[in-house]
Image (cartoon, chains in turn red, brown):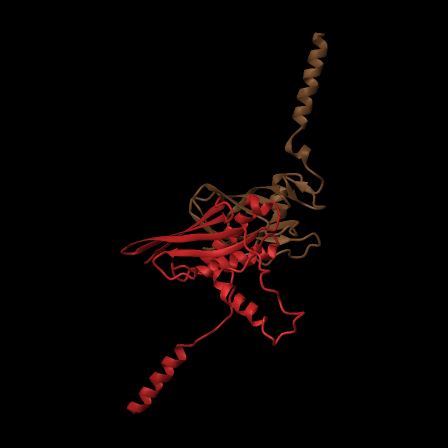
Length: 188
Length: 144
């Protein structure tokens, strides 16, 4: 009898805990928690890329060559800042306004491939020449900060992304902009 | 100078200045700087109606004004959103970019959340991501 009741209870519990998986809209507003999320990443990247399009050095349509440097994460949480600059780079590259030179993170694989092609395994007339890489004219770097405040039932998070485009030759700041985001979670 | 001639000249200047409204400088196919193609747009309301769409949950937030200008070969847009209710409203919006053939000129943008205080306006602005974008739609949805 006890066994029957236990079995019934197990069946009832597993029956209630029905799991469902569905695809969603990757571009929808996401507010599951107030930690840094996909909507923040998408908004920051789009806002910065559109702002950069209006920078005189890019708007002049001379196809400037940019290298992406670090966006320092000064927030209290883990943020993959590379994802922000990757999205900005993808949008600008797709718009055909900017060319990107290999950055520090991509330098080792680039040099490895260059060196590999110098071996006798490759046809001499088809292997790439050494010394033909093009240096960037501008470097993109920045910071992301956050201010978090929490009282009993309220948590407020403020993010600020600041990006700068520096002229490598003369050290001048050619463009800079900021994107701010505030999210507040209240309980009850 | 003959006073009659002076008055007539002044009247002509006033008439010309009066006629030189913004509309007088518009190129064909544009209204308030925004591309309209062959659509008949006689007022700001017509323009807003032609350029604004709702998707998903409907919102009471209305676009009331829209102005466009060229920034190089890109399109800059300012849209004024109005919340005439007594409550804070939360919406999301995105722009859709259309090329000369009526096809999508760019990937679907992410929805961007916005908050409007009670009885207030919010100006949202953007620039087209590519010079292939010849037209646009502003899409609004409620986030409440």
